[in-house]
Length: 271
Image (tube, rainbow, N blue to C red; front, side):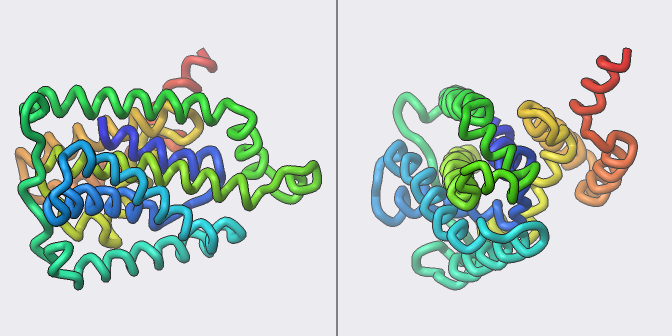
């Protein structure tokens, strides 16, 4: 559920905005760490700590977007990735605040939300509300302007669309909900670690989006489900799960270049 929301935020930038931020994992990881630090270090309640995650994600995205929105292609991707590695270095080195390589643990709800089932329903409810908002957003005038900027930025500027501003707002919204996904993931795992924001973490939202198909809003949701399902099954059977998962992802991408959902939709139309 959390990864579905995470993938949808990436697809807002990539699938609908035409931007490929290799550093999107920073918003997810910073949201998780914001929750953990507020809960463990500042003594905030679990709900207050969770509420801090989307705010930190949005602020981080707003700062990164200031430098990225006027760039395109690999330049945007690498600059966003540079900011992610900067955030990773700070988290990894600031041991007193973040726990360094050991991370932070003991991040749990109490009371009525203490059970795994209650946490699941909380994550499900927040994710569904967030996805409904994102779904409405991409079909709103803002979403259409964002897609227009993806298709032809110079023409969009010529007809009066403020392309840098539209992209900046998209970054902030994506960062907000990616941060929320990170906060929920912190409670689901009851801990946070620097690996969530390391360079390898950047591949996760990309793989989920490409697996499901970025041509539709629902594609990344399907891709997230496939990714988590494959990871869960493989980790229970072999220690080389990452290698096998990589091979399966390559095969799916080669055989279904439009993603699983995209291929299914095209097959129905052709039929």
